[in-house]
Image 1 (cartoon, rainbow, N blue to C red):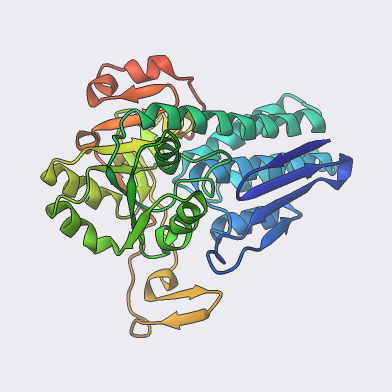
Image 2 (cartoon, rainbow, N blue to C red):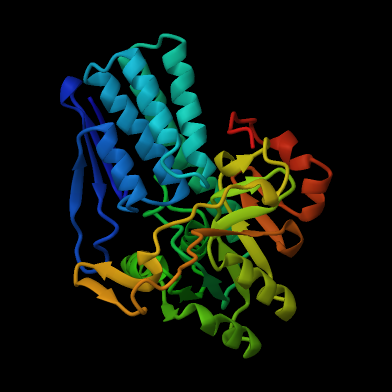
Length: 353
């Protein structure tokens, strides 16, 4: 029997009775409700609707969903079709593609259903380990008394482990460092306000919620000593995509001479993508900008039929990054230029862009 548990994901395997559960993140923080995903189609819907989110967790969830389908008797042809559909569920976060590439390689080589599930379980366990190493590496950059600004959600709700950027903060706090976190609400879906505050409260780490456009004011007042964000895809030159609004923070940090760090696992590196201009940016529904929806219902605040531009991510150039905090170490821009990062972390098969 396999029994895997994470903050936002649970998987129980008892032969053909395999169950995959996710914490419905669209209902947080007011309601904690677990959702059973019975099929790959349901997993795809949950990924697209952001019921499960965060680049690493999306990849792990997709892999376990495919492993569940294999255990329940899907044919190899069906599994390949399902893997391709999962692969395309969201276009920016490369972890999803990497996980599906690994699963499809197993399918193509004729692995048994149990072996395919074993690949998915390995991906889960690997992410837990990667998060631990990221946290240990990044915590060395945090000083006692730091006020840290973060964007979106990058903790246990976004990974199988302790998180990326939020995992670093969590580790620094566990080391006894007195820190305070400024949490961007993160428009338009409020992942910071809804999810990061929920995690920080559970962890007992002091925080203050701000709107996204308050960040510059705080920096000018010298209330922010460090900025740490996560990432959904890092290009070969160090440019990276993250939740929309990250690029603006990087520009502000550069102007105010505040260290700007990005944290992520090697599984977020895309060596096939030369620079950030080649990262595909997901465009999402206008309804996410024209109003808000949650356990309270739907609220509209825009004039009906207003034209809306809603990119889910933006790209931050490598020249604005102080350090990349990866599972295999902490790197500078010079490390990327000299190709030292590529030499230290495993190669992965990703989309050719």
